[in-house]
Amino acid sequence: MTENYSKNRWWLVILLASFLIIAIFLSNYNYLISLAIIAFVFFIILFFLKPLFGLYLMALFLPITGLAVQYKSLELPFIDLLSVVVLTSFVVSHIYLTFFDKNKTKLKWPAGGAFLAFFIIVLISAILSDGVLSHLWYSFRWILFFYLAFVIMPVNLVKSTKILHKLLVLISIGGLAVALMGFVSLFLQDWSDSFFRVSPVAIGGEWIFGQNYNLLSEFLSISAFIVLSLKYFYNDLRINRLLNVLAGFLILINFLTFGRTAWITIVLQLLIYFVIYYFIIQKKKISWRQALVALFLLVIILSPFFVKMITLQEANVSSTQNRVLLTKISWEAFLDKPLFGYGSGSFVSLVENNVRFVAKYGDPLDSHGFGQKILAENGILGLLSFIIFLFFMFRKIYLGVIINKKDYKLLLPLFIASAGGFFYQLFNTSYYKGRIWLPIALAWIAVELISSKNKVKKYER
Image 1 (tube, rainbow, N blue to C red):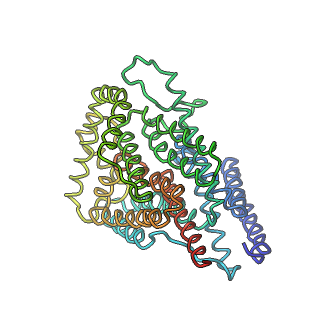
Image 2: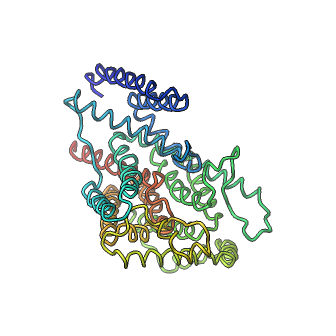
Image 3: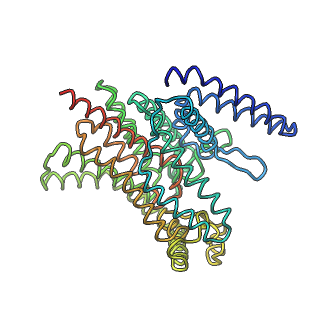
């Protein structure tokens, strides 16, 4: 920040403090509301003065999905509450710089045009549907929020590989915590049970990582490769070996969830990683004999896991039928409103109105897959515009890997982590969550930083 900013930022602190005093008096002396207001303004000021501190906390608490703040009918996940405060501080800081800092840098908007097109279609979808206000609320609360808090903000705050390194370490710590909890869960079960697998564990009576094993495997798919990306920052052979072991441990725990999506994601991640590494970066050639031997060894190693997987899936037919029925509901909704859909956030209502689903499975579920969700809620135009947005996001990350081959240790694992995390959303429900989008933003940031560094080096030559 500039000197001008340092001198004048305290005026904003005084202004916020004044609003705090007024807000307390307007709270009708309800101590809970007063306490919430005090805490909210305090943290806005804190993150205004130290914006990266808030971003570090977001990275560390990224896997915490089971904690939420509740007040009457309002429920807000802890990670979202934290992100709201940090984002508010970021917005206030940017407004402040607009008026007091003539040398301020312009905001970066990754794939901004594509996202804007998608969001406009989302708004049109809400306006043309029943219950306009609820659909508009969902559009801003989930869709616009993930882009602002987990893409725009980190892209504009992270301006060095040193900061990026810290964020990657914090996410890796979260992944290791998830893996250790999964490992402990193995010893809290009956090993003769056919459903013996890695699963969440309540800590202090709270399911801080959620109650579904898919939430564990989803985050492990991301964090395992983020751990590998840390090798870029260390030249010590022992540290690199340790990081390889940690990444292998996270991948193993992910396999032990015995989730179909987890297995598909891991296999694709590993396959794409080695294909890019050997054939594009290293430009090596593998004979068909070597390929057959590698495939044979892989089958031998995975055979016990396949036997367990088959046993689990035989007893898990209802899950498959559930997904098939959700897809049918989405398709029927698309046929009814093909262009703009029923409005964002309407999928649960569509499921609730399906007599067959409620009679067979009870409480309605959200879509397990971003494709069927957006198709039903925002129509074909919404789905196409969202896919275009994804294309521009991942196109830059992939090209960054290919162009900056010497920095593959950082860029390739981040590409695999972010792509794997979103691939998981073909079958899961975190498509608008920070745990998916912050890793994507960090991969984008890494490409920007490395590309700038290499351009400077090329210019100096």
